[in-house]
Image (cartoon, rainbow, N blue to C red; front, side, top):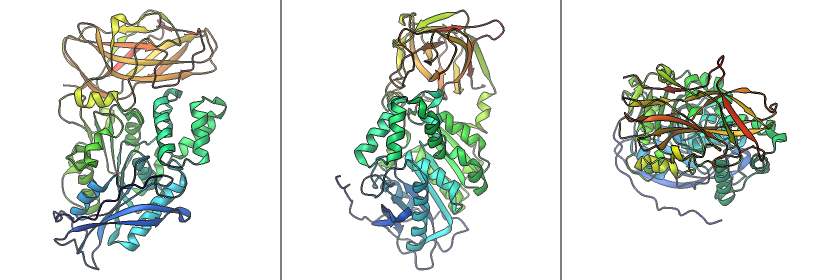
Length: 517
């Protein structure tokens, strides 16, 4: 496997002197240096790492420590630009390549117990080999590094602050939401793992069962995912009391935002939740190149407050910060449930029957591409709503709105379904429809059922992926339901039909959370 290029050590500027009153003595006007080291992880597995330490601190100096596990399939140089910025402001930073990837030893355990033990071993090493303060330890990471950081905060009470960016808190709800395999997400992760690392036998088996829809192993797959989900260890995280910052993108096609929002609401310590436009890890990407970046700016402020004790005001701001998928600025909320305060429903009346196994033309786009276009060009996936074939897509539309509708949060679908088969998959899409009938995708979500009695109606309650989208005045919303989407694995037998109805005793509807003006 090719060796990642190793940059020459460089000297950095002076720290800005924002150390809080609890740390003493602080780094003097000094430069920082980079060194590359091997750290013995769990079981002696070699972890390739780099250390950025402000120089000239003196033997008695003790500085806050930040540990950065790398993202899935990314080499250890991933965080160098941010590590240098952190060191420039007085932190010791240790970034390491997660086991099983690139030059680190071991096999890919997918944030398993070995990975969590590795994080503690890296902290041990840093406290013994750098001027780090054991009372001021933080962890951060993007994607895989975010997941490991949250799990480590449950396992190691020395961790006082976490910035988990574009990660997961619930692995099952991320790639198996609605009991539906997220095909493109799993294939991308699996392919990148094989290309840049050494998947362990457990991961190979789980990935094979997942992609082949081996329902006989469903309980095993769910148990595997729960073991690797921070939600499973929520009580430990709350007991340890680390300050948790969560950041993600509205269109994350690998770790959708809903599971982060749900986890955030259950945290009891200091916490912050930030959502921005984009797809997986695109909200943080420019910061990894050393460019100005809102997500990383917030992460630095978070660590300054909870590792240095700096009175920078971040703890007095509204803790939920949302940037809509438009040119609008950030909006602050006291909590996530505040977004549910103002809801508007539109009814899904009548009965519609569709054939399965045919893509109607409505879909959620392409993983890592479609929502990136939305982030930079406000160009989400589109569909001509009048031209969607009604034999393969159910379509319902709201009234035309006289005023803008600012969708904020989680759209909920309630309907009654019957199928000619025991198993099936449906995918729901919410579109912003303009005067010409062109719909821009607002959100979507899949739903799969098994072991249903053919012809017998059953209720479906489905949360679409959370979003912040402004519907212009003069437009309307449309709900579209079909059975095929390239993002997901579908479970519809050939020739199956799905019927959507709205019984008088249990009407079908879409509930849309709107920002109160």
